[in-house]
Length: 200
Image 1 (tube, rainbow, N blue to C red):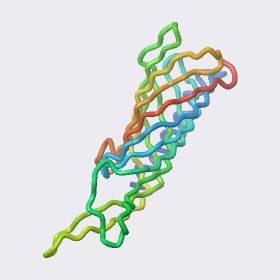
Image 2 (image 1 turned 180 degrees about the vertical axis):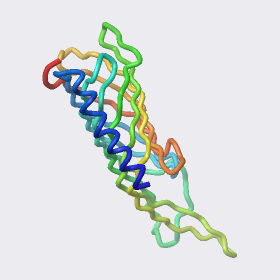
Image 3 (image 1 turned 90 degrees about the horizontal axis):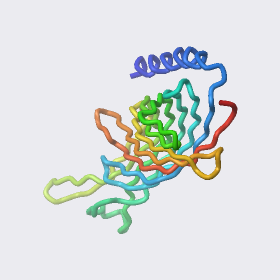
Image 4 (image 1 turned 135 degrees about the vertical axis):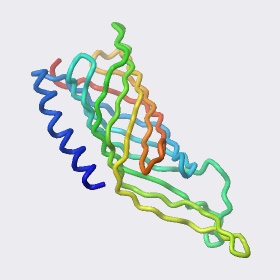
């Protein structure tokens, strides 16, 4: 896994300067967003917060550097709680995601409406605790805790449109994170405010 991570980092490090050189004055955009998330493996729901820096490489292509945070807030299903939990469900999952990705605009309209697809590796730093039931003569429920420091895949479909402010755009996205041969592990629906920076 360390070899794969090193290969991905070197690939992006080498490709980014070459792509940037093709456009002397790349257009920069900064986005901030928030939305709802589902942990599909543990059936938890929560919130996500995102920050992105976008560098335009060509008419339809760009590079994104993303930093996002997810925290679960509750469960989507009823569980038989462990005896020692005092009636409180302590299932939770969370993570900080560091995501470099390439973005391609599938649809570009003169009105300012864009539909884009992006994908790239994502480093998750976080963890989870979830309930598992066992049977050894009588049913017993316990919490299992996992800590994550893993690289997965983040894919995103995003719709963007103009606002009344010429230096700002609105966007909504649906993104999915997958790791350990499971996708989507997390599914995110996010609303974003995007601000123009620098020159075109």
